Amino acid sequence: MSRLLLVGVGCPSFLASRKHLGPGLRCGHFASVLAAAGHDLLVVGVEVGKQASGDADACRAIEATAGGRSIRCLMTDERGLSGPRIREHVDAFGPQAVIGATAYGAALATRIAPDLPLWADVFGDLMAEAQAKAVSHGSDLSVVRFWTTLRVVLERGDRFSAVSRAQASALVGQLGLAGRLGAATAGQDLVSVIPCAAEAGTGSAESASRGVRGELVDEDAFVVLWSGSFNTWCDIDTLVAGLERAMRERPRIHFVATGGAVEGHDEQTVARFMERVAAGPCRDRFHLCGWVEDSALSAFYRDADVGICIERDLYERRLGSENRVVQWLVHGLPAVTTARSELGATVVSAGAGFDCPIADAAALARRLVELCDDPARVQAAAERCLELSARFAFEPTARPLLEWAMDPVRAGDAAGARPLSIGLLSSPGEMTELLEAYLSELSFGQIGYRSARWLWRRVYPGARQDRSCGPPRA
Image (cartoon, rainbow, N blue to C red; front, side, top):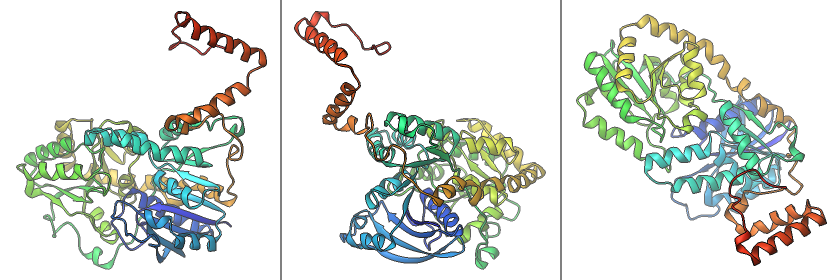
């Protein structure tokens, strides 16, 4: 077995805090399967989106349980990540490899363990996420920031994972642009798919006796559940308009939401959602509960009739996935979804969910009314959820990572020079290295010919041809 350093962003889901985002779920998934397989783990959770502590030694040690075993966890912020205390813990542990859960976690992992084999989990296409944020916030500033993070991961990672097959193909293309698809990596399986995963929890004794029905809504209500963040990809206009139409037709339809803003990434979407709801005619049937503890979530899943996932038509959705939908699956909760992702399409085709078209509030309302009037149809889909959920359990989804963890190695091009680097795009001075590499592949005759041609064009500018298009010449 291996000694593995696992770096995640935010508080991992197996720790005490529930206020986590998708990265916390991913880190918890990886920690559980690696610990259960017998590996020795040190988990570093980096809290982001907070005011710097001002203490470069900020570091809290936490004992936690994952995969049925006790594991060591360190919580810090980005400032503390570079402090001596983290370094002391890591050096004492002596990891053989490092795993970064999510692209941001992988980028941070390169700062802690720059020379170890690195599994970089690019959990969702980062540039597609940047586009989603740009359209949601009306600014392209996120494109540069996200690219800066992705660049480090592409150039440094040894093995990669994506959340869908579509994203895995996109990631291979990004690695090609980063110069990673050279002779040294030919034949190596650089990218694997690790989809979203979930396993049903037991919940607490308190949550078992308390729930949505009788607390928030009447016992006979038709409950439509939203759980998780209100992120940049959410089509809140269609969501609210469709729900309000359905509520006017069927007074027993209620909407219940757990979750809220993505701290440090998107606080605007949930704010707009709440404004729309507050100004609407059915606001008394929208129940917004905010982030709740993991132990309480099972009661929300139990008392809901359907979950709802209404998306914008973005590349982020086509390449990404939904943790919340997998959570619903393992609790037997069917999804009403626009099904833009690979996961959403799978759920619908398996009969474990119900589709509705993009940006069509009237169609969404019709779907909700149909399901409200047909409990047998909803129950049949709930049974299909439980059957489908076995495909998304922790261990089978993480098999590529588990296999690599048994013998973690660097990529074939880790030690040698690469023909190009993404750094060229942000450091023009590095173009010199690319030019030298290009010249090293030419014969003396070709160098002489190209030198004479370049000199001729400098002396006679009119002789220069427009070569902005067309195939490259020899």
